[in-house]
Image (cartoon, rainbow over all chains, first blue to last red; front, side):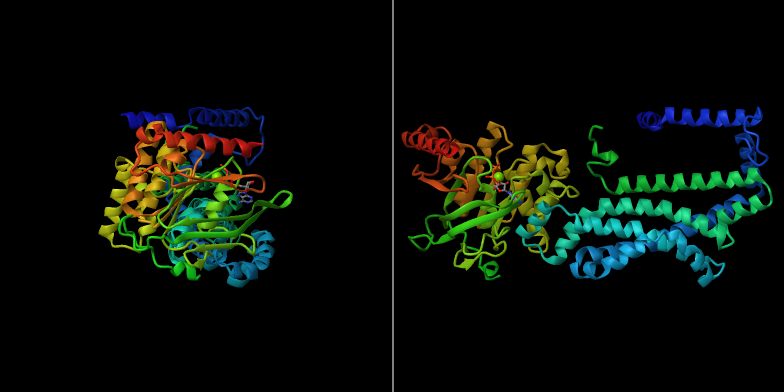
Amino acid sequence: MTSRMRRLRWINWPGLLTMGLLAGAWEAAVRWSLLDYQYLPAPAAIAQGARTLLTSGELIPNVLHTLLVTLIGWSLASAIGIALGLLLGLSPTAYRYSMTSFEVTKAIPPITFVPATLLIFGFSLRMELVIVVYVGVWPVLINTIGGVRGVPVELLDVARMLRMSRYHRVRKLIVPAAIPEIIVGLRLTLSLCLVLAVVAEMVGNPAGLGHALVLAQQALQPEKMFAYVLSAGVLGITLNAVFRSAAAWMLPSPTSGRGGGSP
Amino acid sequence: MKANEQPVAEQASAEDRPQPQPRNTFECRNLSVELRSSGGLACICRSIDFEVREGEFVSIMGRSGSGKTTLLRILGGLLSPTPGSTVRYYSEQVDGPPRGVITVFQNYAASLLPWRTVEKNVALGLEGKVSKDEKAERVAEALAMVSLSKRAKDYPWRLSGGMQQRVQLARALAMRPSVLLLDEPFGALDAMTKTTLQDELLHVYEQTGATVVFVTHDVDEALYLSDRVLILQGDPSTIGESVAVQCSRPRDQIETKQSEGFLTLRRKVYEAIMQGHD
Ligand SMILES: Nc1ncnc2c1ncn2[C@@H]1O[C@H](COP(=O)(O)OP(=O)(O)OP(=O)(O)O)[C@@H](O)[C@H]1O
Ligand SMILES: [Mg+2]
């Protein structure tokens, strides 16, 4: 009972109220023709569109495709980002040799690679994955390097004082100390992967939410189109929430919810 | 490098130590330290000479910023002095933490691993070095010594400052060190706990014959524990006074602190510290 109460308190009621009011205002504005565009539906119409998509069985396969690509891309990006980040964070030589290339590549907005990727890989799943992974690698990579290089000197002194071997130092001290920052990178990457999956589906791979969204637009079905937009949002929120609670469950820390610290 | 291979000093009790004239555990000659500060290199201490004999309990006192922590870091091989200085651990030049020398750091909150429980923190230095059973035994023993057995499974950031400091002490004791470098280990404790841990430390010291270098701001504590109290004075600091404490061991919180000799020394140390102030 208490846990239920706590969950009820945990929900941000004022925040939900604001959202409800905004949706209400939108609905009213469209009904009373304050917002009078041919292809701007009211929330109620969008909800109707979502219901149609659900019952016709169009929504779920599209959501699943995008979800799958996001998760696969995210896993690959995380693995590559963490591995490269550890290498660059731990080896000053590797860091010195590669940092210039990385800074330059990082400075190029990743979205500009989309046409090139399309040209190289064609309209395919591979093209979608390449985009998602390429973009997703960056936050994990940068945060892993930052985490590894930012281990507090006090802890490094402890490792030296205890004469820990290099292997133990990395495994028992540097990597665990870097984990909170790596997790932030993983979370940023997860949202990015979803965004890029949808983008890739809109311009390249003809599948998933992004493609369905464009089709609805071309078919002049704004209710369906906005219903897909909404689904992408719900997918993003869900992924983020699942990730957050998984991270908090695995890592009790002074800053996570289980830390018991005051605000 | 060689200093690291120095075998651990035999942990024999005071009576059956082989040489009548103890060797020097640490020997510092012409020791100067310069550290980077906002105005370029700042000289922290200049031409310090002192030694710590094997099995000796030496306290270092001096006002805040006089370089006590710096000195301890030099002895622990965590900081290099300026060229021309000599720091020896037994017969070898120190250029890295020597084996068997364990430090308890002043900054206790930053010196524990927040993702490890108390017992795992205490076990850190033993992992991969002793068997699982021995590790568990030593950890339990060390935690019992600092009265933290009940908090073994807690995370250090759920403990009070004094408790965290005791975890660090337990981590040091679990290593069964031949040299302990303690930087204000009881600074965050109440008078009662402090007294208990002082006696616990003296017990360990007398049992193992370890060499101890102890930094404190508490004159009574320094005198009660030590064979010798070094007082840092001046800026850059040097050793202004070296006070030998000849009170007999084992010591007693009431008897020793009331004795004539203790009170005389107390006065002497206070005078030396006051002198350091102007
Ligand atoms: N990492 C560092 N880099 C540069 N200067 C430092 C560093 N650590 C300490 N110092 C300087 O060295 C001097 C001595 O510092 P130290 O920490 O040894 O003092 P202390 O005697 O231990 O003081 P306290 O009693 O406050 O702990 C100070 O002037 C300080 O500013
Ligand atoms: Mg200090």
